[in-house]
Image: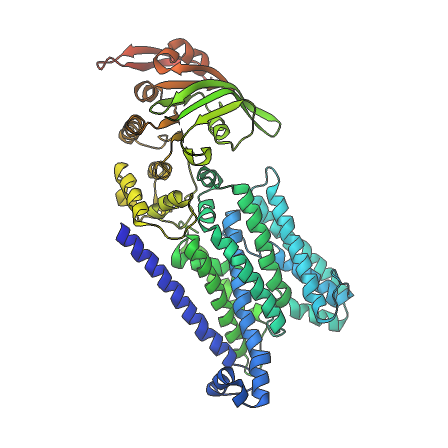
Length: 343
Length: 257
């Protein structure tokens, strides 16, 4: 048994290593592709020796393509980890930033800035839209959290509350859109499609920092979080303080989900599908599941970023469209192939 | 030696009082104590009160080598089998809760294997939890409890999903463990013949209050069964000179009448 277990652990480490390699390839391809036609070699040269290439190529690679490609990686990772932990603490396979209404809340916040010009936090200029989106996303996440602590509220109720939030914020957003000018309407529609193209080194840095800070917090509780999947009673019987763990995790997850959504808009399915793929690849031991979910989310969004550049030559489609188009059939296959299996 | 005393112990969920007046002990290591009573009498709540998971009045006094959090191990009635974990991983998970390191030592793995072998579930090691029957899940749950090396073990209906031979095997194993390792076992049971055969002490709870407590042969009487369960029963002596129970029927009108 020991040998079998050690082999299992080694295999999971290999899968994590493999996913990292795939991510690296995706990242390089993502940087190499774009409307401006440069060869793969030129792009690699710009990455390795930026001073040896033309100023134009250097700007395109370092200031345009690299932030976008890096944002695909960090936002995908953050959304997937957030989804994984939401599924863990709410014991529900449908939990994700998208299905719990966090993305819809962020969309409403962004619409407030784009249509009415109202800033929910005292920031201006380029930061008003992500600032508003962040505030609304965190409020929605906290609402879900505090509702979950109320007596008699089950995990099923939580999902229903999330769906209610989605409908509420979508209706409010539709109301704003109805009154919006043509220009504002276009901006809102574009934001809700989800896009990486406005990524900057600042937004990438902030998202990456949130990921770097929150991930060790989850990893520290990896045994306790895994125990939570056996049910509250069982986890408590192992000595886990279930209430405190759920509170800490939900608060951390709120931050982890709100930040990328604020910068990249509504990108569905990554937070839902990423954890499911990781679960299928390496089970639910959080020591492997959590980095697995992170890498899966990063690979999915990076691949989506590549596809968004290939569908229409010379143009970049909003990435939310790609994740939805690829995610929905995948989600169907997940539903129909995993019946009766652990989710 | 570990000992546990309950002094006027009660429990409440918010303002709703669900248990009161449980006084017993000291119960000592090496003893198996049954907690019996009708459904929803408060047996599981008593276990959760001892663990400190439910608030309430009275005092729970534990004398043990380790702090209560480590010394008392609770085995709930069932657990969720939706997690994508193998049986072996789920028992390692129980063993690792007290230490935060990521590495699982060979000694810990060996301990997991020995406990699985003692419960004859080694062949289930790499089966998914979702593939197990209710009875197999109960055996895994017992292994998860034992791997934590308890001084006091609270078992909530550990044999309810097991077939008869597995029930006898598990209860005999627990009885043996209690005696050989001076383990204090509290076990919620419905089968009173198992109580008569494998338990030393008994706590009887009905409608959230303690009805009786003491040595099994003194407490389990025909009068008590009629009063607590509404059942007419006779206590006979079997060929091994042990008491056993024969149920004649309900003492009043049946619930379906």
